[in-house]
Length: 287
Image (cartoon, rainbow, N blue to C red; front, side):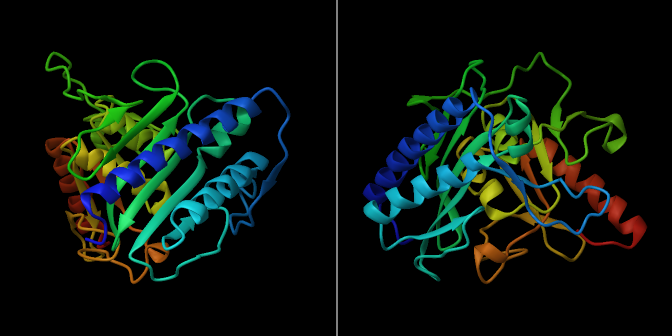
């Protein structure tokens, strides 16, 4: 670990502050028409699948400026800006300024600003401002290593209601996956699904090949909530996630990492993994 207990408290505090500031910027923009561009896509059937709004860029610029002032020795890995101020640094801030941009620009109220802090590739703190929450309002879910998940400063009890038998699971393509065993949802925001899993609103979520900025902060939340995180090892199995730079599916740099991921309550996560592994084995594929 490069970060001490006091360091962790400091980075969580700043992450919460930045996530809340991002949320205020995002909310204020909803009253006007936004400038929107689209990233280049090889998908000829869906050339408009990856939009970027003016708010995405403005939020990331704001966060980067604050980090450069407060923690100049820390690296930054963001979705919209390629600059890496301290390449190969031990501490990396992973930022998705607006996760769920398609939802955001369409006025569909499920989106998030996701901030995760990695120490040598391991998620150790996170702050996710979400447009909605278990409290039916916007706010920030946050945590740091050794602490529970909190929502706007109040510790959260995410224990599921034992009377509810059906399990909500976020999946990449929606519909009745896994033979209809679970009630599936597709929210359009990986960060929102991570936060909802950590808050106990969803039993699990399955991601196809997310980028680090999609899930870094969310993994910190899920682990703090006592959840399980499994990663595809590239050899046909899901294994316990150890970090973006160590363990199964590791990369030399978090920016290069893209692996299948399952997060959530252990029993649900392992059931999904077993089904995925069996299906892959039948097809001669790997996960």
